[in-house]
Image (cartoon, rainbow, N blue to C red; front, side, top):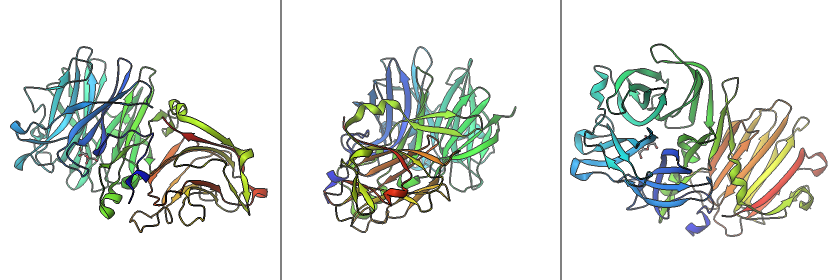
Length: 461
Ligand code: FRU
């Protein structure tokens, strides 16, 4: 299989090898910094380091030297996920240190710290590591304890860490005045699910907190307030992205100089890896998304406007060419942005947009909008001629007040991200095998088409 047919061109990826979660995302002195779980020795998960890149515009990324190596001399095997903060003098990374034997991920993980004073380029591990061990919980049962996330409130620092307790997922919360000595406050949240709550994040607006977490499947969020005993009192819940392991997992966030909350996330290649073996690379970072909190406690999610810089050749509604009852777009390719507005009020049958389509239609990925169910689906049943085990549909519900749906769909070789009414985004990986699977087609009777606007751009860096 030609792996280049699958390799995205405008998404962030390391030059080679394995990448998973975004880590330590932070805006500092004009740069957006992105660290990530990285195996420099191969294209499978293992020997986890922290890779590093930075960007001035969230679109063009500069690769930087590896930021964290496992300290073998201290028995450390992996540097698991975590966060970065700046205290005004120094930047600190907090991450989960995994070691040999007793320091295993299930019961022996420790939280470690590293510091940088040179613009986040080089990092020195704190001589007093670990900064927290699970002994801090006393008799409370906390396992799979990992992925610290730190934020500041006035003079105090708070940290949440994911885990599981008594067989259910949980998020624990801690407090510190100096970033070095930490007190366990409580279980911020206990989940109903059995999987641990990986990569918890807190986004705060006034008294309202949004907890985002990755429970081994679809990434969830809960908006609420904090009780005096530091427990989350839920107000609203939602899905960050229904993509799960086959589209979107383990996000991280930062607040930039314009007070924007920007979310990064991992688009796994695991299904491809399991089926046909992967050569050279695995894992993609999703496009940066801007989050805002609405009055109802729901998150609004949209692509950052900087991505418009990628737009090249354009084709509009007037260039759609009728082909029977369908219409073919004037541009094709594997790196595209589609912008559509649909008036679905009177639509009876689902509206279907086909991308990554071969001329004979034997290979295609369909984005299907079902007005009655207010549901969008990425139908992957014919995305790939080879029988890859990731042909299941991925669906989510969008919100609309007037029957209209504004879609921004980003296609990049093996990634599809569909933003709907700026309220949610649905992501999936697809692996079209034919070099000429590049077409864009709108299915349906033009006379009854709900299409009120259509724009298509080629995207390149
Ligand atoms: C999530 C995760 C984290 C962990 C990291 C290890 O994908 O399992 O919980 O820190 O990946 O690479």
